[in-house]
Length: 190
Picture 1 (cartoon, rainbow, N blue to C red):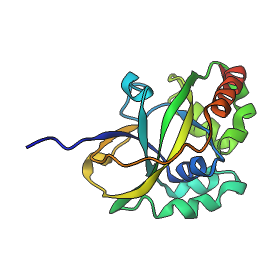
Picture 2: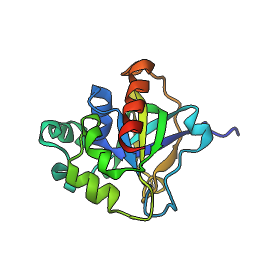
Picture 3: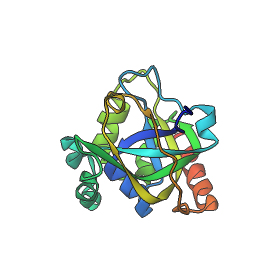
């Protein structure tokens, strides 16, 4: 019997996945899950694409800026107790360690989170761990994929392996736009 192909998936708030697909968001702010020593993008993942595994929590509403809150309702059905719906994937354009946290406000237009959420959920959470800004090229899947939620998808880890190999659509942003965004992020926080 041959092994079923798997693809890495990054766990990310469902509202952020929809914001990436809408073109409203181009960066992810990551430190890693509770069970990880640090957030890492494996070299083989950095050179290829990965899926975005949507997550949700009731506390997300106050963590999203008001002009983006409708995304919470849009994304709610993508992550339930029974199933998860995959709609998108991405590839890393740049992974920029945050050396100057005071510059994070300058890149606020590149994501949907409130300043308080960035401070509490990213900077203050595990303060000895470095925050990384990922500039990502998001792309929709040609068809969404519904997976039953299983125990191996639970837990506070950033990455999961999924038994799917979907077809991908065209990226939301072109490479020149994303390289410009990466330069902006480096100038602000790197």
